[in-house]
View 1 (cartoon, helix red, strand yellow):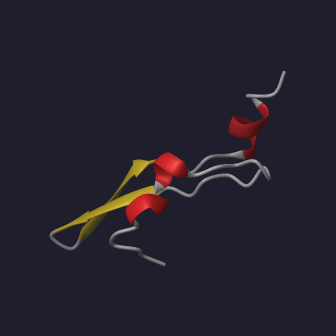
View 2 (cartoon, rainbow, N blue to C red; view 1 turned 90 degrees about the vertical axis):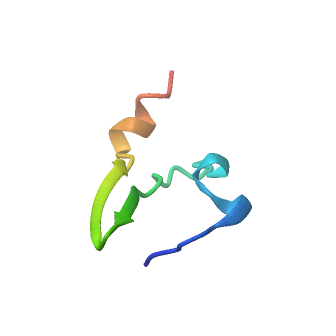
View 3 (cartoon, helix red, strand yellow; view 1 turned 135 degrees about the vertical axis):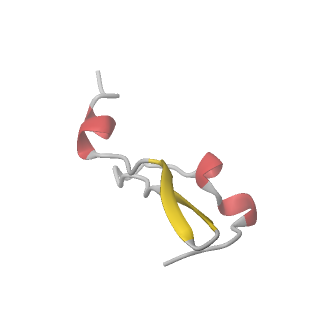
Length: 50
């Protein structure tokens, strides 16, 4: 699913209070896509726990 503009519901306000990792951020330019922020992993989330 591609969402060209999310307004206030972008990554900056994303929450993982329910331990769901955030998806990657993909930039598309001239028909070519590239990952600019990688997908979070379970290890990323667990690494924040004490």
